[in-house]
Amino acid sequence: MVQALPRFLLWLVVANGLAAIGLSQEPVLVFPEQPGVGPSKVLGPDREVARLSGPELAPTAFEDEHEAATTWIEEPTSGPVQKNEAQSSPVKEDTNGLKPQPRSPAVPPKPANPYKGVFYENDFSYLDKPDNPYFYLGDALKRNRLGNWGILDVGGEYRLRQHNEHILNRDNNFLLQRTRIYGDLHVGERLRAYAEAIDATSAWEDLPPRPIEENRFDALNLFADVKILDADSGDLWFRGGRQELLYGNQRLISPLDWSNTRRTFDGVKLFWRGERWNIDGFWTRPIPFSQHVNNDHNFDHPDLDQEFYGIYMTRKGSCSQTLDLYYLGYAKYSDPRPFKTHTFGSRWEGKLDLWLWEIEGAYQFGEYGPVDHSAGFYTLGVGRKLARLGWEPTLWFYYDWASGDEDPTDGRHETFNQLFPLGHKYFGWMDLVGRQNIEDWNVLLTMKPHPAWEIAFWWHTFRLQEARDALYDAGGNAIRQDPTGAAGRSVGSEADVTVRWAFHPRADVLFGYSHLFPGRFLKLTPGGGDQSDFYYTQLSVRF
Image (cartoon, rainbow, N blue to C red; front, side, top):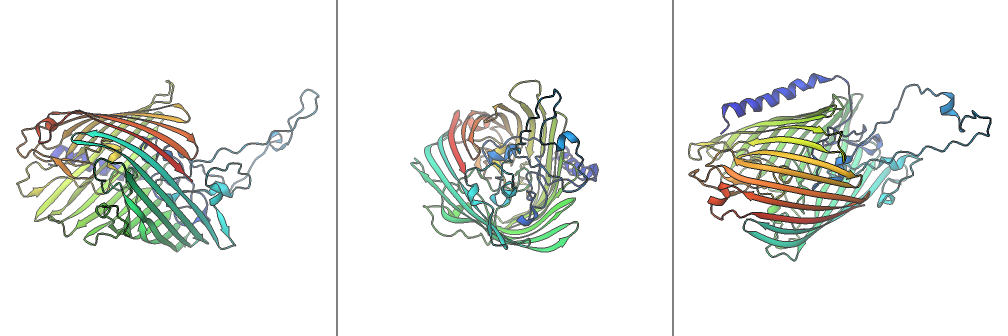
């Protein structure tokens, strides 16, 4: 139930977001999770300004791991350049009567990682610089000029992951493989065509593959962009076709990279890339995972009984803060219990010296079958870099809350609908918990003992928000429930550890382990609650 205090906090989050609009009037760069990266305007949509890393949040050590360290630096384009004699001289100054020595040429800094959470945002513009000395795996396929009318990028990823699961009543040991290939064609400054294929397989499993594990030879993205307005204050673009969606920190909208198949949509988008705001308006139909069964080889099709649409805005007012405002509508018409929800929310994250913070929340209303729907969620996080210690540690404390239904029989639906999230990131890597009817006190510690090594420790303590409502997994499915509430609210605790080794600029290995300490609710509901373990090893190679 969305009680008085939680509802007050939801509106406080929205109010904070609106107030933060006025924090700065200086136009800055696009934010890391939002579409719009790269400094080369000729690349087309979303690439008109450079990119800086935002506040240092929890690294996605299990999803798009390479993105955590991305930093784009804007190059000066105007203004006088002052040089002193020493700067302009090609030789070192002779201060002791000795023969001057040639000055060593400056080595350009290594380029930031060009791969983004969605590959259609990748930025290889560093290859356009005549003095660029850096070339990595796959770079020969990028920035290929087609006469004087076009530029073509070709690339992709191969990922291999071994699972060993002993989670409650599920015991399975299997191997996942995924290959993605894309082509990105820019025609002048106004046209773009992008296509990306995926092939995802599962092998040697003891149980039938889940829908998120197999999808044979299919289209992940297939769209065209057209610039319809080129103004001094920004550009307006239209996109139509199959497209992945990624917004904010992926709490509500994510391509779900952890899954072997990834999530995508068919639809249209109108997006503005301006000096002060990035604004996206979209209407789509989801491509359901449910069609990925029995080694499916058919071309994926959208669910015509679902609609997902909305407006997502990002304020570009400060390089140390990010502000998102959004409205999201989601409707499903043919479900046994059809629904239509409207979600209004905001997200504000930032940093000040060594302190970090993030606040996000949303209020949701609509209809679930014949009854009214009223729900919400919020996240409060504060972190600090422990600069005096070795290994660059960063410590975060989070509280996540999502409403549940106090009385399933009272004619009012109050369980939050988590929409299309990256649930795997925020509620334990066993995927037993989703952003519905849950309270989660959690602590995250990240360390970097070596530039090529990253370690993350994450501890969660889960409680149901309402005892009579269900426990929902990362996919939003009800997996346990006690309608009487006698089993209590204590779900249990989960400890997660990952170690990532980036042994090459385009390749890394990820080791992960999770352990579940079941609480009273899991022990007393049907199926029992034994302690559970999850091991995995993942290899990713991008090209």
